[in-house]
Every structure is written in C-alpha cells, then in structure tokens.
Length: 241
Image (cartoon, rainbow, N blue to C red; front, top):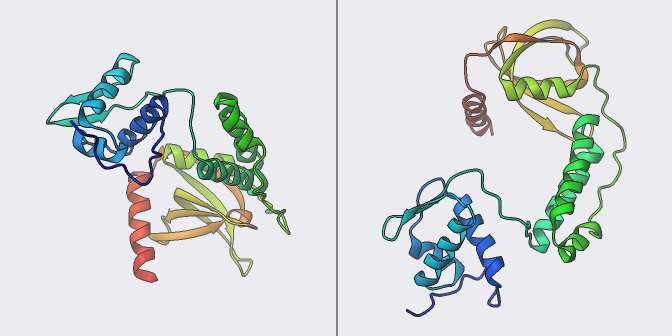
C-alpha cells in the first residue's frame, strides 16, 4: 500500500518517535472515534503503518480503543514522555507563562513559574534550550492591580461552583451586598474581572476584584453548572456586540 498524501503540518523527515507523539496529539484532539484513514492522511503515512503505530502505543500503555473500519479513540490519562513542542508552541508557552507571572495574583504567578520549570525539566535538552533562551519578553505593567480580597479564594469558588457573598463598591463609591455565582475570571493589565450571576440583579454581572472589599465563600453550591453559565454568558455577549 502506498503512503498517503503528507499533511503540510507534518515534516517529511519525521522520526518514528515524533510521529507517535503526533498520533497521540491527534487522538487527544477528538472525543470520538477517528477513522484510521483520516489519521493516516494527517500523518502522511499508509494505513498499514498507522495500524503498527497504534499497536506500538497500545503496547506502551496507551488506552486506545477501536479497530480497523470503526476508528480509534484515546481514553484520558495517557502521557507519552518526553514532551515535544514545535518552536511556535514553545514561544506560546513561555510568553503565556511570563505574562501570568507578571500580571497574575501572587499565587497564580508563582504557579506559572513552577509550571514552566516542570515543563522544562521533562523536555529533551535541545528543546529545553529553546524554552530557556526564548526572546519573547513581557513588559512590566505600568501599575499593579490591588485586590482587597484573596483572588485565589475566588478561583477556588469558581472551580468548586460555590456561591460567594461580597461587599462591592461600584464606580460611584456606593457599597452593596451581593450573593453571586462566580463562573469565570478575566485577567487584564490593571484589573481582574469576576464574571458571575448576581442573585439580587437576577442577571449576569461583572465585578472588579479591586472593588470587592469583603468576601465569604458559602458552603452551598450554586444550582447551575459552571460550564452552562459560561455558555449562556457567551451567548449574551454575542447578542450585545
């Protein structure tokens, strides 16, 4: 069987180890079974070679389910070291991590630095050098955001879908008590914005973290899933544009 057309994104001289990593990544990008012919075409290899590669990954512990004619799906939880990234992916990781380290609240800034160190530790030496010598820099912020409350606690409330009660001072200095359902947070140069459903307004509202002067995380979870709130909020934003 002749090799299929090679995708423009796959180098012609790809090593087999690199190809296996690309195959894992392709499978990760799909929640449902992907036909073997589609995978082979994207990798620029024959279907027969694809079947051998899948068998190799399965032997190494990858939980790939499927068979010829039905397609293949990768179950979550498998990581094939070492990590491999393209030059552009390395730049994106470094730039994003440096931005968070410079603009994030103290806990998430430190987490960004630690994450970058962990990624560097498992990269092949030649790729690690690209990460460590990246010339993409993040300029200092002209002013630092100041939050009167623990932003990390808000992030935890978002992850665990907990209501929070806040004392909030609006742009006119008027203070009000609100119970909100936080589902997302936006990070900007000088301010952090909490996106939430406000019980008193019965609608979506945006709250600047530097105007929240008191906060208590409630034991009760809010009644809608965070993903559903985020989807509904995005729909509203689309209509308002």
